[in-house]
Image 1 (cartoon, rainbow over the protein chains, first blue to last red):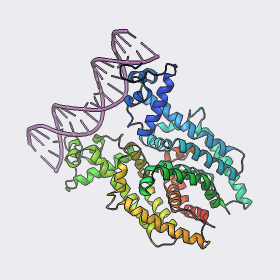
Image 2: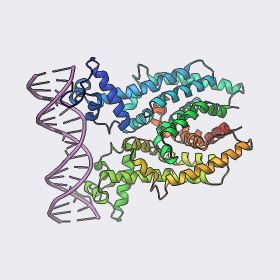
Image 3: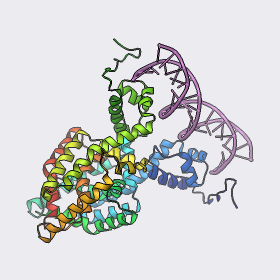
Image 4: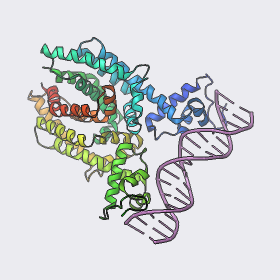
Length: 218
Length: 218
DNA sequence: GTCTATATGGCGATAGAC
DNA sequence: GTCTATCGCCATATAGAC
C-alpha cells in the first residue's frame, strides 16, 4: 500500500505531532534553523508541509519547540550534578562522563545551539526560562554559590588550587563541548575521518577528568 | 553636500571594494550569513545594493571572502607559534595571550565560524585551503608531529605528563575559544553584563596559561 | 563605477476539498 | 486531520540610464 507520492503512509498511531517534532529536531540540527526548509521537515516526517502549520502555526514556533528540547536535555542534568553535595572530584568525573556520553550520541547539538544564539539573540530569554520546566536563570546562581563555597573551603584546606566557580564551570564545560562544536575544523585540520574522531572522543572519556583534576592540584 | 538618500556620499578614495568587504565582515559577524541582508551591508558601506553584485557577483561569493578573512586572521598565527621551536611552556603562554587578545577585540568571530560550518559544510574545503595564502590541511599535520615529538620527549624526561598532541591542541584552543563561542549562554546563566564578562576574560588572561600548564605537571 | 527600477525565484503560509 | 493547489512576500540578482 503506497500513497500517491510513492511513500509509505505514516503510521497512524496518532502521534503525528511528535513525529513532526522529531523530524524538525533532526533537520534543524543538521541545517541550522535558517538553512532548514519546512518541505524537508515534512518529507522527513512523512507528512505534508501544510500539517506542520496545522500543528505548529509557524516555522518560528517550531524552532522554539526544538530549541527548548535540545537545551533541555543538554543542560539540566549538568546543573544538578554541579549543585549536588558530591565532592569536587566526583562532580568532575560525572559531568565529563555524562556530557561526553550524551554528545557522542548528539554530536550536532552544541553547534546548533551556538548558531541559534548568534542569529536569534532574543532566544537567550528562552534559554534562561522554560527549559524543561526549570528556570536556568534562577537555578544557575545558587549552583555557582554552592560550588564557590566548596572550592574556597578546599583551597583553604590546601587540597585544591584556588579557582573561581565561574572559571571552573566554563573550563570544565568548554573542555567537554568544544571538540563537538569545532568538529568540522578539527577533523579537517587534523585529517580525522569519522572513526578517528570517535577514537579521539573515547580517549577523552578516559582521560579528560584526570586532566582537569590535575590542573586543580595545589 | 548630501545625496538624495540623505546620506553623506562615500569618500571617493577608490577603495569601494574594501569598504564593502569591511561592511560585509561586520554584518555577517553580527547576523550570521543566513541572517545578513545585502541591503544592510550596502547601508553599512554607504553604497547601493547593486554595487555589491558589481564587485562580488553574489552573496555567496561575498560570504566566501569574509569567511576566508576571518579564519585567516584567527588561525595562522597560532599555527606558527605551535610549530615553532619554543618550549612547551612558552608556546602555551603565547597562544593564550595572542588568542585572548585577538578575541577580546573580535568577540563574534568564533561563533560566526561555527555557525558557518553547520550551514555550509562544503566551506570546510575553503577552511583547509587558501586561508590567508596558507594551506591549513598541509601545514597542520607537520605542526602536530613537531608538537608530538616535543611532548613525548618531555614525557620521557619526566618533566611533563604524557598527552597526545591532538588532545593538547584541542584542550588549549578550547579553553581560549569556548568563552567567546558560548558567550550568550554564559552571560545569561551567570548573569554577567558586558563589564563582568570583560573582567571574566581579564582573569583568564592572567590565569589560563597557568591553569593549563598545571594540568601538564607530571 | 554608481545609481534607480525591475525581474525572478524560493519559501513560508493559507484556502479549501476530502 | 490530512491532503493539493495557490498566494504573496521578500531577498537576491539583473537591466539599463547616467
